[in-house]
Length: 98
Image 1 (spheres, one colour):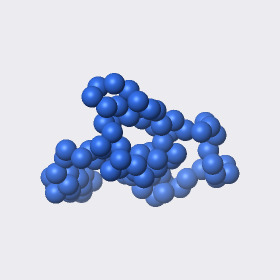
Image 2 (image 1 turned 45 degrees about the vertical axis):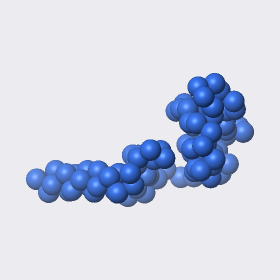
Image 3 (image 1 turned 120 degrees about the vertical axis):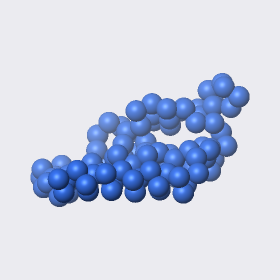
Image 4 (image 1 turned 180 degrees about the vertical axis):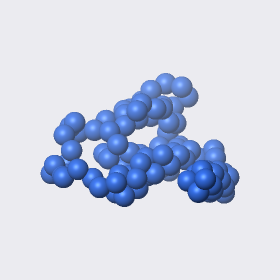
C-alpha cells in the first residue's frame, strides 16, 4: 500500500512507519508543504523470515485482525479510534453469536 505523510508525522511515527514498510511491504512518501522529499521502501521483496508451514486457522485469524487495525495519524484522537475498534469487535461478536 502506498501512502503519504508529512514530515512532522513521519518524525513522530518513524518507528511505526519502518515497521509498516518492513512487515507489510508498504511504500511511504514523506513530504513537506505538499512536495515529496523522501520515500521509505522495503529493501527487498523477499521475506526476512524463512518459509513457514501454512498457518493454522487461529493464527491466521489473529494475523487478519492485526492487518485490519487502523493506521493512526497524528490528527486522530486515540480514544475515538479505540471506541471504533471496540464497537467493531462487539458487532462481530454479536454476528458470530447469531
